[in-house]
Amino acid sequence: MKGLTLNQEAQSDLEALNRVLQKELCVKNASYLLGVTERHAWRLLAPYRNEGTRALSQRGRGRASHHALSGETRDRVIVLARTVCTGGNHSHPTELLAEREGLFCRDPRYAGS
Image (cartoon, rainbow, N blue to C red; front, side, top):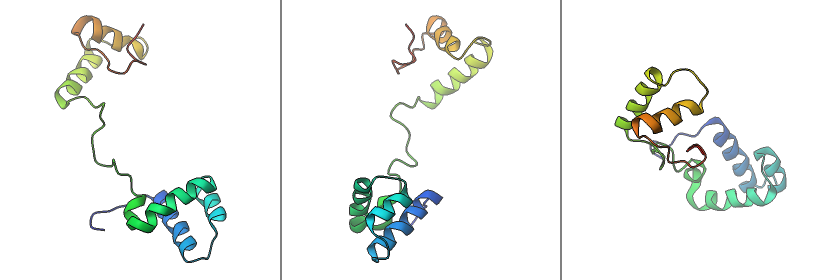
């Protein structure tokens, strides 16, 4: 487990799943401790049996989002938002960057009408 770090929630999950494997706790009660349904507790237990603690860590940790901007574009947007696009609500800079700078949001929820 070199370099594997679990947050506090994952450590609590690990403890509950270990108690299930040691037959100190049934899956139904473990699901209550985990804050998930019994069915989902079974889904968590299966990879834990096969992969061990690594199954509880978030696989995407440390990776950039698929929607992340390049560092250069991100820095440019931040500078423009702080200088050119001041005032207004949170949608206003998006609209101004699209109109003035040709920077369009990829997410259709924020692309404007």
